[in-house]
Amino acid sequence: MASNVIAVVTDSLHGDGPVEEISRCVGGAKGAVRLVVPAVEPNPLRHVLGDVDEPRELAHERLEASLRYLRQRGIEASGEVGDSDPIQAAQDALLRAPADEVIFFEYEPGHARWFEGGMFQHAKESLEPPLRMVILDGGANDAVVDIQRRGPGAISGVEHEVGTSYLPGLSRSDFSGMVVGIAGTVVAAILAAVAAADQGTATGWAAVAIGVGIGTGLVTMAHVVALGLMEAVRYRGGFAKFFHRLSLVGTPIAVLINLAIVLFA
Image 1 (cartoon, rainbow, N blue to C red):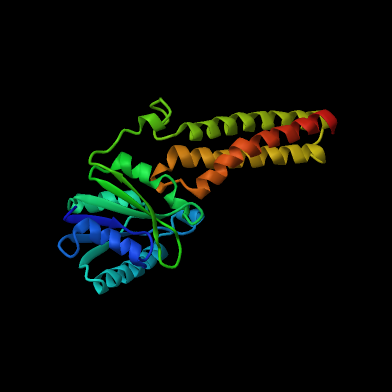
Image 2: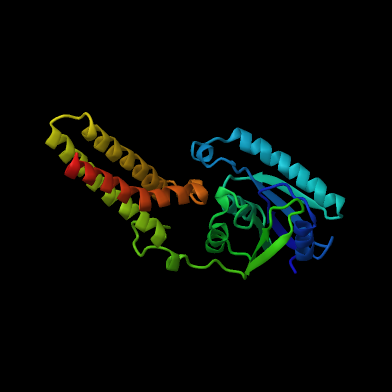
């Protein structure tokens, strides 16, 4: 049982499950609860583009509603709006004052938001205090369906990463998507050039091949840049998975299309 708890809440608290879990952690009304509400942007594209003002306003509304809900149930709590990255928000709160435990809440698969993908793993690699991930069903009462725990001490993320200092934080899945995307883009571009050279013009099927090559290159560039240079904006979850699958599946299809144009057009 912890006496000083940080609860990272990405949605307004409602239902008995989350409140009971917080109360259990702090021993009823005896402990201190600090709510941290990250200023998350529900739309991943707007998040990458750096929308700040509206997410913070909405986070402040969620914070006030959650504090009222806890106090109505006899739990005194303080709170603050945090960084758009839930893990960074928790780190910032820990720098201001330590905690005996950090609790996160997320929805089960099927109801999870884009930023929840890999959140607990990232927390385990970044935060020192004991951690608790409370998984909710996403229903009207936010019933608790599972609880995951980790003791004190951040774990090494080495086993989840590619073993090279030039690609920090990339999983093997990330790396495979990058390799397939880059290699496929190069091949698609070469085939497009061959198609244009064979037809002596950049119109008709040659133009299609060039368009396929350009489209493949743009998707790959977005994926690689986001993974390699934008780790700070939490390029994870549904948005990342979409581009990852597009690299693994769409790029080979693009290569086959351009190869067919070269052979048969």
